[in-house]
Length: 154
Image (cartoon, rainbow, N blue to C red; front, side, top):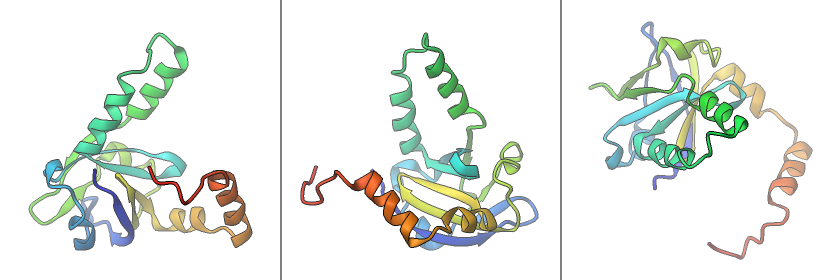
């Protein structure tokens, strides 16, 4: 499984394409064959999933009991807008028109790569979301990681 890392600035061109930076392209799993699914994400970003990651996630979702209303609602919401995309011959990705409005995207983008996905943010929105003082982050870290023993490996 690919584990992406990094934060990359890029720009949208007039046709709503962005160039995937070489530092990020080098991290792509050859198994995904430069094929992705782009979808709406949380907090107002878009998410770019390599095909292998998308398949793992949807495999888990297929196990949900769709006779349960909240499972159906989540399944629909999660897949709302999911669109196959790929790198073109110049290493660019075209953002589908149906997703352009979701992230409030403009010319300046941030690609935030972590785990098995790449978030696509409008730079202004990303800066706002990531701006929190050290005390807020320390409190968040305690809530999320406070009972995790860093010496235990899985």
